[in-house]
Length: 256
Ligand SMILES: Cc1cc2nc3c(=O)[nH]c(=O)nc-3n(C[C@H](O)[C@H](O)[C@H](O)COP(=O)(O)O)c2cc1C
Ligand code: SF4
Ligand code: SF4
Image (tube, rainbow, N blue to C red):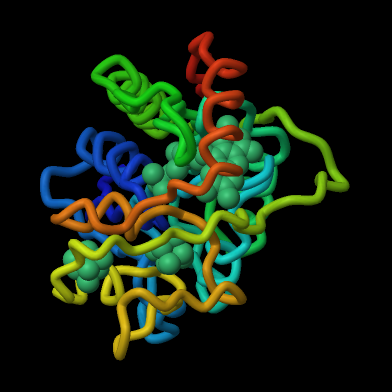
């Protein structure tokens, strides 16, 4: 079966899910089309998939569920029975029901998911697995893609079982750590332009709308001057405790 092109569709505030999507899609095609849902409000209805496209979906686990905003952004999507892979990235705690949710959403949107991955990435909070996804994790993404290609060559189109329970646990929301801005801020506006929630005021880059902010820490990672920080006592104590608790590395899991 001839595949048209590889498309990586991801929501990825701190980049782990994007890295995994690109490593996976890279096995399927050299020219990867990227659909970055991190900044755009929702999937553009006019974009159609072809049955011979191959799509890799990737998004983070928030509270043991797929981040809610990702599912919402896919609400207009119709897969036209294109084959795909679903990946969740998680911060070394657990992915709980997120991969099952990814699977169910993809089937509901008329995709045929032939493989899944739960890949460990640096946790947003604390100092947990800070170098991941590392080469070994990205190699696992490639193994997943190769496994799916083999299935297609053999004419096997079965959708694999994944771990997880339904009804899903509560989750999928953001956190409640709202970054602060140091006086070193040079007012370049990069944080406001990059915030997936439009939570940072363009008039005053120090002001964050806490009703919109999901505590994804994209603004902290992206600020060139290190001026966006999270340094409240409450956060530092939590981050220290959490980093100790999750210090033992977890293994990636793939399902083909
Ligand atoms: C609000 C929030 C909740 C999270 N919940 C979990 C979780 O339940 N389990 C886990 O292992 N990691 C959790 N994480 C960590 C992210 O899943 C992980 O860092 C992910 O790879 C980030 O993806 P990205 O780099 O593509 O944004 C959470 C992160 C945030 C911001
Ligand atoms: S990215 Fe950093 S320097 Fe630029 S406006 Fe935001 S906080 Fe200020
Ligand atoms: S303001 Fe909140 S939602 Fe926006 S990038 Fe920063 S942490 Fe993420």
